[in-house]
Image 1 (cartoon, rainbow, N blue to C red):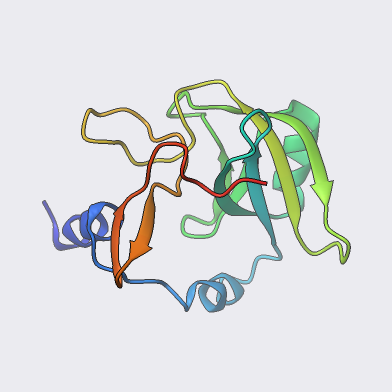
Image 2: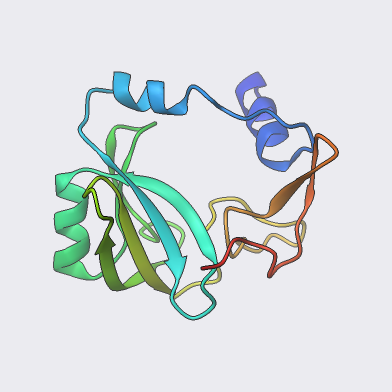
Length: 148
C-alpha cells in the first residue's frame, strides 16, 4: 500500500479527527465555478453526502435524473454510480434562498452512497458513518446520520 493509500485509509477508516478546514480554499483554487450540493435520501431524510456541482453537472442531473457532480479532486464530471453501480436517482432538486447551494433529494438505486465500504465490503449507505466523541471518531449507528 502506498503512503497516499495509507493516509487515505487512515483518514476514511481511522478514529483520529483530521478535519480538512482548507477544503473550500482548495475548491476555490481549482478555478471551476461550483455550488455545494447536499444529498438527502428522500425516504429516510438522511443526509448521504455533500458534493459540488458546476453548470454541466447540474444540467446533466436535470436532463438524466441521476445525481451528477463536479469532482473537485479529479477536475471532471462525476456521475454517481457510473462505476460503482450505486446510482442516486433524482426525485427533486431544490435551491436555497440565496441561490448559492442545492439540495438533491434522491432515491438510492444501489446499496449506498459513499465510495467507502464497511468491514463486510458493502457500500456504506451514507458518507456520515462516524461521529465525534471525546475528540475521536467512532462508528455511528446505521440510522445515526443527520436527518431533516
